[in-house]
Length: 201
Image (tube, rainbow, N blue to C red; front, side, top):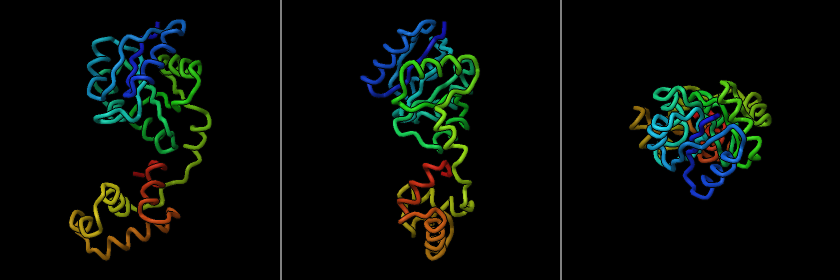
């Protein structure tokens, strides 16, 4: 019997997951939570074998929760669900020690099969997502360009970025111009989106 923890912030989606997985032979949902801070305590209290984790959990977010599960409840293996999956998310999820990654619109039986693989210690990911993650371009940005882009992604303006990174405003603007050029973006907001979707940030 595979013991499952469901961590999903939307009550309607969470109830749907609980009902679908609970109807599968050899599976039992032993805990359900709606926030990031509740996942590890619930995993420990319920002795769950697997956790279905919403990427967008309120609080810390899904990926820090997966990393915390790996560290504090290593017997509970995680499969991440994303409403808008991207190759970058797949890479970040596996870097956080998830064993599975699937789109939220996956068929219930495919999710159940994925959880069986995860419970057995094998990776489970949609084939199209896996192929896209492998084929996505290597990061063309330098470490300093990434520092500048991360600060920009946090909402900082050029002068604030310059203060944070001990650079001149002109140097910050030059870095952002190179980032926009290298990513083929229209502007800095588009560059942040491209870099984030590609898993570079």
